[in-house]
Length: 500
Image (cartoon, rainbow, N blue to C red; front, top):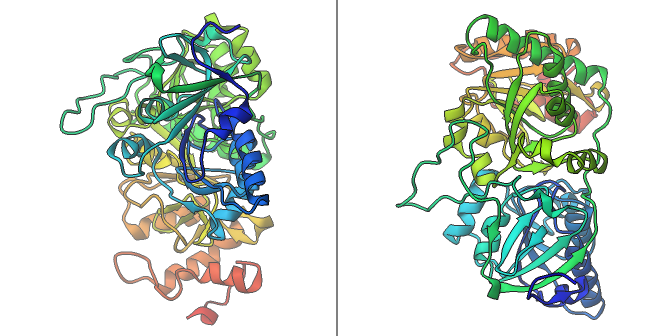
């Protein structure tokens, strides 16, 4: 039997403790380390309550997106009233865009302090996955930290999912540190990605632990799709650009720590950097480690990685747990408040690499909304890094929907990252270095280097029509390509006069 004084519960018994209207802080940053058994049981409870004619919805706070057993199950049971800060589930996305679920999109580094400041109200329950728990309330987290440490400290009650799939030997892979709030906040003493400044465990008041649910469940992370010709070309373009920056002396010959977003393009960029003979062995200071990083660590191309989450497929995670002595000295997991903290990002000189939905001719980036109003996933941590990076890079394919949509547009339909933060744009056709360029120079460079050939002359036509003014902007024509897609199903061969 487990050696702790806390009640051992079934997931159903734990779910029964949570009332309608509760706000819950769940563990998880991507599906890594996300609670699974209790949210599944909570979804079943919601269905029973709804069938009986009683309301049942809860507010859901996590670290970032989660897996099908959390966001998916609760959304399908129509059990979510409020969600923050980021998500990627298709059912939940539909509910957010229909207005059924209130969603607050925010920079991930801000969420923990928003919780401490009381901006989101009380946290009634923390539901957190653990690899181990001590009688005194010491909690060894599993494959992510996210906001778990803050939820555990501030929640009125705590429920722990003790997951046997993650060994207690994960002890030592986490660095738990929570800054003080103003006016007593001090500097975060990280000057190298491998610096450790906190403790390996979270410590919870034992009196708050309402119960422990024993589980044996793998993370629900899936491997990404194989690279395509487009993603490979984007990756190679970014790698070649960074090598050029080293040759020019604008990046030190020892290189700088990398932050990489989530997805196939991010994997392709890291793969290209790992293969490039002129890229030295490098460090990472990032939110998420994906499968592509594990071979880089094992080959020592990546010498150390600081992260918030091990977003690994079950196969890759088994490789890590089978070699914990190796990885414990090469990976550290931190709270997202520290991983994404602007102070640390600026100090370390991070090269940030994130993906865009669309980029406009001014260098503004939309990373959250389709056609201006349909939420995809959220801003995540991209803004935390972009605004404070040594060098900020955004990548995307030049087109979408089989070429019917250009990702290079006159004006973004929604703006998350402004021209003041975006320094470099890359597509499969090339790289536009926007540093030191005025708005008209940026526009021409983005068209020449990044736009798909089918759209270049059309975008040049736009520039010729808006040649006067500091910004190449027409209030009537700026969104004409979006309007053309909504009206005709294609952005190509636009008749500008139709939208004047």
